[in-house]
Length: 170
Ligand SMILES: [Zn+2]
Ligand SMILES: [Zn+2]
Image 1 (cartoon, rainbow, N blue to C red):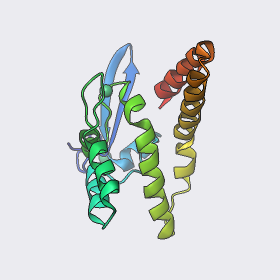
Image 2 (tube, rainbow, N blue to C red):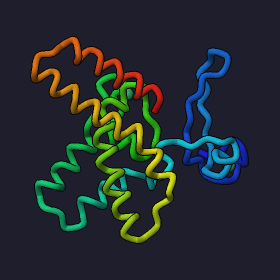
Image 3 (cartoon, rainbow, N blue to C red):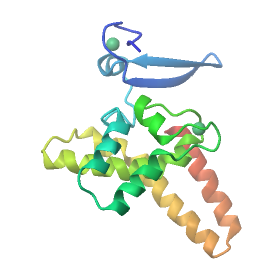
């Protein structure tokens, strides 16, 4: 899909916005998105992500590792049915719950990508900041797990709300 602003470059940034109570999806190339002042938390992901993930399988990883990657690709959002593979191709979540399904894996993956970027000494400094919500999400999930283990359901409910709130932000 071409960028809706310049109609020249391929759109890599897909933003859902609420304008006058209507859901508007904007498909922009990175330049135009920046011109409009948008910074997606995922803009540093090299898309298509699925190719990257498949590439990870081929780089002589252990069978266990490739199995893990494969099962990640076929992981599905329980709400809209989007697979991680499909997300990787478009870089766009299907619904609000997708983030809850894929957030942790995405975080892991980003760390790997980030790490390999670092290796080449080419890390956009914005990358670290845009990861903050993802890290926060991870921390909350860990707390949630512990609360459930302790059968502290009151705390679990609060944490669950926080995670939901955070995923709205992202
Ligand atoms: Zn453009
Ligand atoms: Zn979904």
